[in-house]
Length: 87
Image 1 (cartoon, rainbow, N blue to C red):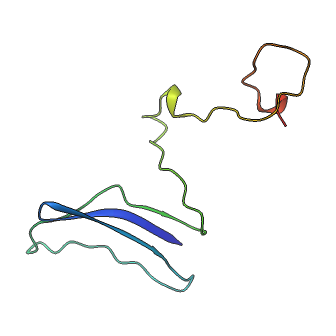
Image 2 (image 1 turned 30 degrees about the horizontal axis):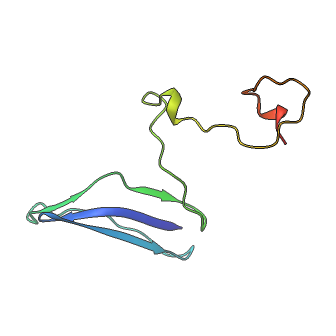
């Protein structure tokens, strides 16, 4: 598991990024008497490859979707948005 998120302490942001073993545990909490600690947009994912964060399906716009990249394999000169047309 790889963790990466910014932590704001007072007016400064700190980024925490670490790899954890399968047996490690994660606890994230904020004590009510601790001022100046803010965390948001925490993303946890399994594996050693970090992926970009995506908005939820209700927030996504066309520009958020990936573009097809590859070698075009049919005889039509017009570009296609069909992944099967690329290898």
